Length: 129
Image (cartoon, rainbow, N blue to C red):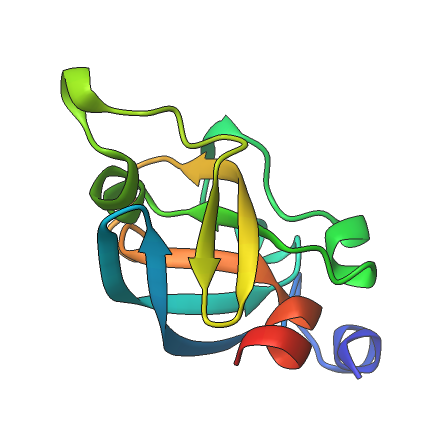
């Protein structure tokens, strides 16, 4: 469907599907409800986001239903601390709903993404949302 739209609708550069919802997130004693976005790699371009640390969701992550996450800057600080008490979140795992996910990246400061957690679209659709 996406390829069809890109081919047949004028002035479309890149489009990307996404799903979202709110789910419980637990890491150690930290426990909150967070916005979860199931996305594809093109989301980075469409939303003009940049990775500050680590990497972004890949096509392999989507096709393999990988249990990985990219965190917005604020939610990363909320979960893993900030300043001198910060823990590098890359490679750390936290519980989201019924699965454990591994952090692969943190986004640069961006008001539209700071409080969100991004996971592969396929993982969101089949395991989380």
